[in-house]
Length: 406
Image 1 (tube, helix red, strand yellow):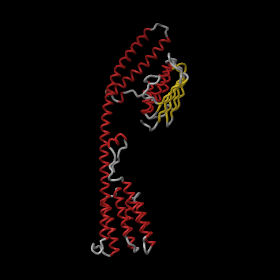
Image 2 (cartoon, helix red, strand yellow):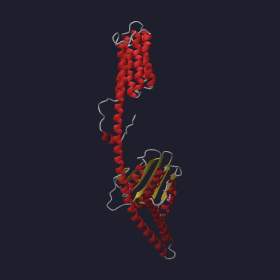
Image 3 (cartoon, one colour):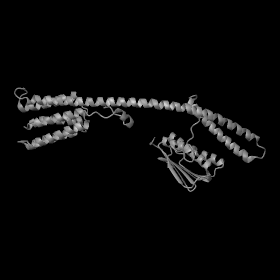
Image 4 (cartoon, helix red, strand yellow):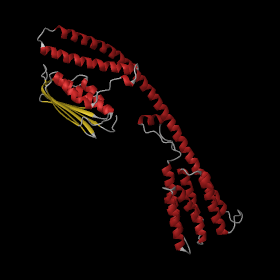
């Protein structure tokens, strides 16, 4: 049977379910209620051998219940009960009526009518024929009615099932059409974003290359003995060259000019110690606590953790004073990143408390940086929190290692 989609937006486009036919569980539930009502009547109104009537009722009820788990064996048992009733010298009328209800229920649930119809028809007809001694319509029409009712119940169940399958197929085709349309829209948006990103990175890459040239010129122009400024210039030029290399890598991916083997691997959490060293060389007073950074993590989670740590330390360097406490803890379930630093006092700033969880629409203190960090955390199912209180800024990110992809 066709399995429908669960997307709420697509389901709204499909519309409400038609009132007819009713859901399968209502039809089968109604058939089972009628079955047990008939069996109760059979036991209460039985004359003669009450034990045999009770046994046939139990067998028929057991077969009906078995059809919910094993339709074929349960149906065969229920269809055979009218024959047992004839052997026990009971009237098979109610028991082949139960067979009619059960035939409808199992056919609606999926058993093919070419299988259920002959079995139910023959057993019901044979039971009445053995009980009355004839199949003649003029002498006793009950046998013919029994066979005809069993046949019609199988055909009715098959018709209802076909109607259900038709509606589900129409519904799924509508959902597929909606999904295809949304996919085309997302692809168009993604292509436009790639074009814009390519243009921006072309411009940024050019300016970074020019900046690297100016730093190199300043480095060779320093007088002898300027060791401290020379060291700062070398560190700055090294950072600029790293940024330029990453920009060139992004451009190569966007333009599809080179193969994957020619690209520099994206930094991952295992390189966070090198990131700490680069910030410390740049003059940042940094106290780090790194645990589990060498674990083998999914690439997207590891890369996101590295970039989040990089942006958090950059934010602390730009807007913080004194020392920075940097903590990374990774295990098999979660990656946690925490940065705590004091904030610089800005003119006109008011003292107070501010906190936010996973910023996605407001930039926060660090401009667009925290927005990008929040989006990157959400892309792997994580979240970030940051708090400002009493001149102290704390940043915390938590990324799940497995699952939870947004």
